[in-house]
Image (cartoon, rainbow over the protein chains, first blue to last red):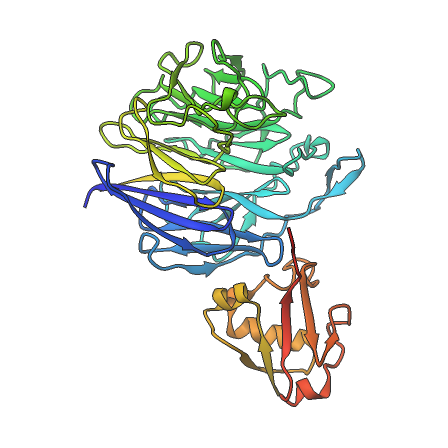
Length: 371
Length: 99
């Protein structure tokens, strides 16, 4: 039956929300993997019933699961993430060289064309891929070894590769983002990489427009126009019109340009969504009012979306992977909060409803549009 | 071969889809022999007790048996006779966390 499946990763398990195309009545299944941190779940665009899940724990390490029946059952797949070649070092908090150490998978990005291929962005920052349905993982180590890796430094949340963007038609091109190193692009399928941070300015680093060192929080694109990228940086909402070669700021009239997620409307390439957060010191919405901001002009001009969202005493955060859109005719927008609520707007952001509340803190939200 | 009884913590029992104790035939009556046998029978547990790259015990995983903490022993050290004879279980324990 056509509809939507929303995959929700939380601090204490995963939840699967399903609805028909009306998106008014929801079924909530879970917790799956109860008690484990579920950093990210995402379905294959080739086979929506194939879903990948990153399960992690300070006690028991990293586990990766795969479902082939839309999340009803799961099997564990490979979890051996070994850095390729010379492990090397990055900068530690005290400025000393520190060997790369695998901690967890932050983000799983399934291939757009092959159901058995998936990418994993991990902490300490690196990109891995599996081409055998998750049984084995190989690092695309050209990223760490392209030349600036030794300068990368963790942010307070660790040094994580959290964003993997695949070009919709050119399999050789992809982008990744690393906190706190910046954005990087490959044009040869992951063999070689280069920083694409020109135009970013970050007041938190000694050289504001350094080649690397920027705390990029999230990047998004619309598949019909893949040279246009939108970025939520630590501070600043940015836009590139040349595939990341250069960036310019489009924060415009936002009340604050600090935030984590950013996403693009499924059918309108110039309609962009962000969730402004007060500041880097105050990770909650300004004035205790939870507002999504929408630009219909590709940035610069923004409007607050409040209908159905709490407008007083709201002090939650929305994390970088916790916003998503569906591809139904009237685009649905979804996000989850650290307060355990998941919101849905079935009308492109005009109105919102709380699908579920009081879950553990939400780490990730991915919407799947089911045929 | 040595038949060893193992008690797993809640999350690892869930991951392995088992209830209660697990018994495995270990090639050697050592922690490494027991863990290798356990992971062979339950591949879902690979990497959860020992780091895959280094083979070292994870920091928040402990190994107890016969009222002793064996966590800092060499993985190839012989386990207590009572464990090797199957009279006492080998306990895999998640470290306590408060807060």
